[in-house]
Length: 489
Ligand code: ADP
Ligand code: MG
Image 1: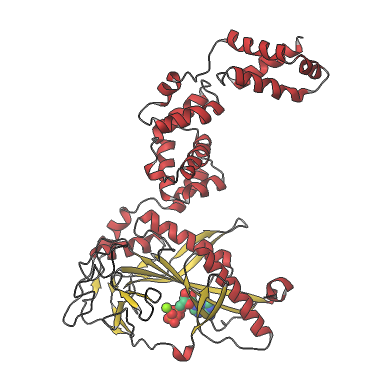
Image 2 (image 1 turned 90 degrees about the horizontal axis):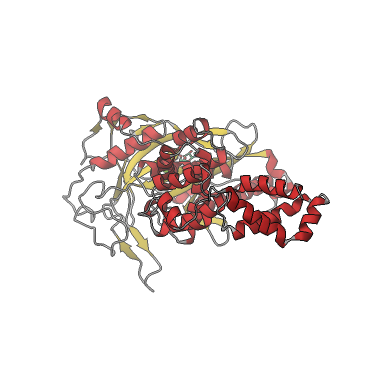
């Protein structure tokens, strides 16, 4: 593809609308008591309801409704109090009933938007068309047996939210940021684990192009099977180039459903419009309309946890963190929760951020651990920061000796451990001057160089003093004494 580099693409505007499916982490399925847990042996969580036996009746899971309302409120949607379910009819082996229960004309959340931050420093509100509830289908496996396709119905009936955006994203970056933010919100709400590789969050991308300034949309293609945010972006970039090339050559974009091949980065036709299903939606006769009250919605609103955008705002505007620090910390709910506890115990916010993103993060990475089971409590990490601020331990000794010791013995207080390991700076000036004198005696040539104006040798003396004192000195004070000593020579 050449259009993206030769400038022809400049004439066109990319238009993207996303449909995001989020599997809700309820214990049971949306219309039955079957377990909704992931990872069981195939076909273990399948009662007569999941199997779609005639005569069985669906029964709505209250939690799934609560989760849907939470998501709607977190995405600034209005909550529809009069909900109806609908049947979406199609025939496929992993859909035993022959229809999927979903919502059509009366979905639970309407409108709304998710604000996303872009690399140019601007924020854009990505508009949501609606969010609806539905059940998942089973899973067909075509590569497990030489002749047959195998079906696992554990997933059939697991609750899903489908978040449908307006066709208002105009770059792969915007689409990627929308997915990142949406996933963060799902995780902060604790209603979906957001794992795209395992399929608990899935995304279809609708992509079209039009001449810049045009007021009508071009025909769109819908790309399926995108199992990472990166792949959504790759598919968008590929489609933009492909569609521009076709239109530039005088061709026409057919409204097709496309498959994305992650190995080649290319799309191919899965179904053409002529082959599209007619779903024959009609109201689900086995479920009563779901009527919610204002009171119910307000109670959920009151119980909402703090959301990533609010935390980001607080960190930047109240704690004075940089935009970068705030976005790294809020990217992960558990990291943000740890940080929140940490800043309750220290008001040195910048140091708290540095420790969390530096020593703690690299420890967790190296040991393949998550912050959720990190042994050092926020209060104890705050105590370490206090020791540094009080000038009783130097930063490098704290990170290379005290911090690793705290991880090994999380039951001990930072200060006790520092004393036990003899890491605290000795308050004694005589001690410091001994180390200084020894260093000066060791490098007489360097003293001469210093006196000739080569101030850079200070570092060498400091290094030596750090080594001989085992870091148990106050670097700033020592530096001053060292200069005094050298200048008096
Ligand atoms: P359907 O009901 O056929 O799935 P919708 O109108 O509900 O179609 O749109 C589904 C998704 O496609 C939405 O996310 C919407 O934003 C997106 N979409 C619709 N038209 C276009 C277009 N011309 N270009 C890009 N995306 C589009
Ligand atoms: Mg749709």
